[in-house]
Image 1 (cartoon, rainbow, N blue to C red):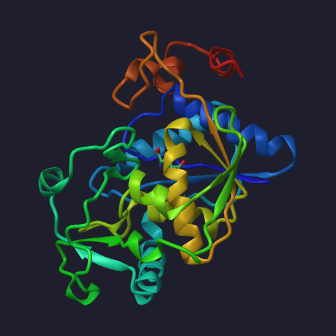
Image 2 (cartoon, rainbow, N blue to C red; image 1 turned 90 degrees about the vertical axis):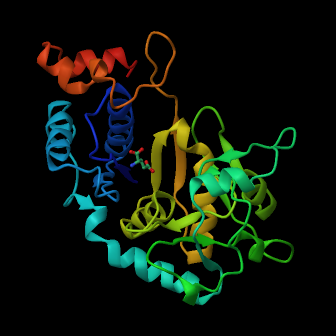
Image 3 (cartoon, rainbow, N blue to C red; image 1 turned 120 degrees about the vertical axis):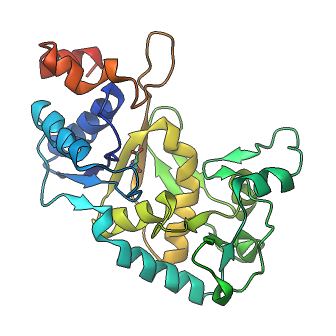
Length: 280
Ligand code: GLU
């Protein structure tokens, strides 16, 4: 078993991160497996070395150890570009110049029971579909044309989920993706890859067998599994865990420093206290 914890160095780790990290660490260690640490610093405008340093400190303080060198996304921009080129050669990638405002304006009124926002943002109405890849400009995003994959006999992938809320096999159909996700962004201007695209390559290159992460990313898994299929990568098993909430039932956020691991640490809590607070 190879698991990983993949925080973004854009703020302090909070109890929710601790839960994810401890779970992934303990699940691997329980069977003599490996636990990897990855720094998701795709967005270089927000990543800061001091947050990265604090991630190491907090994890060490929690008593977690990781195997091998830390992987940083910023060291793998070429890998993402190469993967993107290979998809583009298959003719399914197009440049998109739409701003968020353009997309809002062009989106049709949501139909009953169908969301208008998916795990990749507002479901893209397809305005730039059909623009040739070779027309791309530095200010364009690059999107995957899901309409190219619709209809039989395209074999659709599936993934195994072991988390409590959605345990079982989940099929990923083109129809589902078209209505619930929309053409995903693979790269943004000034960013080598989107989160959805990079994470698929990161997990594959590091041979992660079990992705353990928060329930908020469950929907994104359908898209990630689809991209794995298009890139010819085999999928890990997924385990989406419950989210840690504050007293008002809200999800913890990075700005919520009161739940920061560092804050507990400085207030004299022990790693055992943190585990107990998390029900671990
Ligand atoms: N870097 C992502 C985050 O901070 C997590 C990525 C993942 O677990 O797939 O939420």
